[in-house]
Length: 180
Image (cartoon, rainbow, N blue to C red; front, side, top):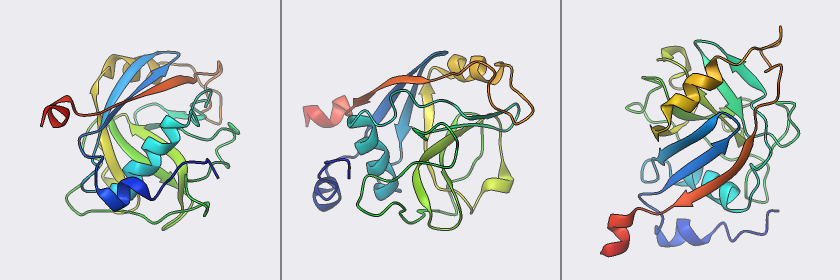
């Protein structure tokens, strides 16, 4: 367990309008989270960010024109866990939330309702992923860092030849909500 009270925001509903900046080796990417539509997924991501879980995670899968995946502290693509006692948590897939453009933030999974800590960014629209993976955010600032990530040379298994890591994360609240 990460030692985080994972019940609190789901009980209070007090985490809408959240964004996170990922500080990576290729630059910063700020993502807006779809907290209202995907509360459990957004909270899992926020809790893991707030506990420094993602610090040092590599982008272990980087497929030009498709996606960049990270969120596994083991760096293998086979690890990771949710912020709750259970390793996995359920999908929050919505018909109107699609992998419709570059910079979509979505959960990676090992099958239906098997989400952990791993996530990916799309490099382009990916309709083949719709209905299979939970879309829970998108890049709102720093798309240039995603551009640079896509250019990183990879090996035959689509792993960057030089490790590209998340150095740290910064969780932001919606400043307008704070004024209310």
